[in-house]
Length: 143
Image (cartoon, rainbow, N blue to C red; front, side, top):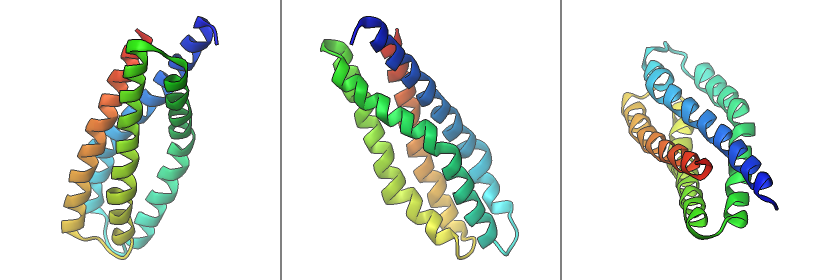
């Protein structure tokens, strides 16, 4: 792939990554804290949240993942090191989401639990920091 092709992949990656950074910060600062204000029955809210957020993030997260892998394959030297760091951060996000955040959401479906909600906020802070780091790496790759 020529330099302009790599630049295009990096630019698409940057856009998808920063969409996800903005989304995770919105979720962390605005959306998740509001969970505690939802009255019972809580289950319809939690189920709707999970369905809607999934529909919103599937495409940009997929694009972010595909372009992160492509950047590892298309770069060399210091750029490859950055691309590998970014991919490692993405793997960490996936692990935190799948092993920690998703099970908490699953447990919150039954009813609101303040302890689980606090745990979700702490877990989400980890994802927020990881994704913000990904955003910085994506920006460095473009620069």
